[in-house]
Length: 378
Image 1 (tube, helix red, strand yellow):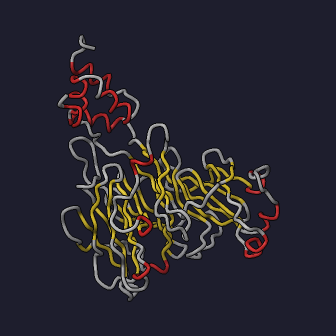
Image 2: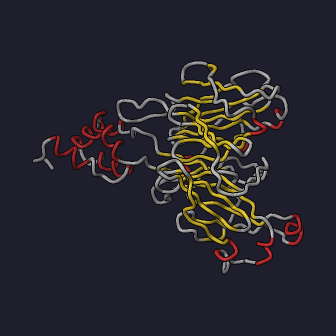
Image 3: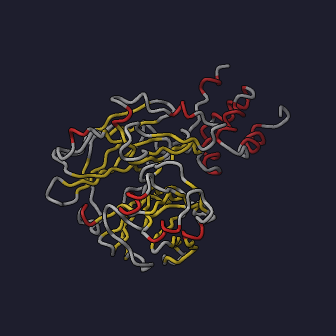
């Protein structure tokens, strides 16, 4: 490698296949470390490679008091102990994850004493570096609200959102039902932000999920509203005519997620059939794949055809997967435990799901740029 000039060396290093491998390459020698630490190199590398996923956090079953749980993407590469949230103030079980972006998590302090008495404090944290910042609510007397992490302009290394450079958007009402929005930028205070006219209030709005960096909402079963996670702007369109939905705010039979290609999908569960709809180039939505749940789960331990005489409850919405369970008061009385199973939305194959992971899972990336300072002086 000593016979290579710096430009050729950078071309080789740009082809290193992962964030973790790049950190290993930086430990080879001082020349490689300097090349990799260069801001221009890091910016080019980030433009060529997807962020490295550390794993996913989930809140577990709603009755659980253990707090958020981390599941590494690769146990051999990521030690789950390094992403513990035990550094947060209060008991870990007092916090619940409500959003994630890049290497950051956004959590709410779920103090039972606050129920019905206001919006709880929030905290933004970066689990790997164990740094956090507590955020007060955007207004007094908030009765209901929902908050999201929003991107910032990429820095010179190609990195975007970080613990020192972030934005939070909060949608809330103060008891009058009128929707308000406010934006917080790191190092400043909350400021009012205009909201899409298609989101009139919380009671008619259902959060569907995340895909491609954006958040999706359904309003009164007729409008699809998208919050752009890069800009914090809202757009709306007519909700696609892709089936009959149950718009119950507690039990909803459709949601939005993404597959490996990062593109949004609408997933519906109706009459024991799961369908996946993809958005076409012209903006229309079309059926991409479907599966009969009673057939795909046949052969799994504990299978009973009786389970599919009832609606299937969506327990957990994940990236590329969903955890389901038969829903019926009759079944709850007849069987001691819920029979949970997951569907891989890429392959449409089923397998048993061992635990309840809460309503959503939240992806967490490794921080960017990588921490190389410990090696540069050696």
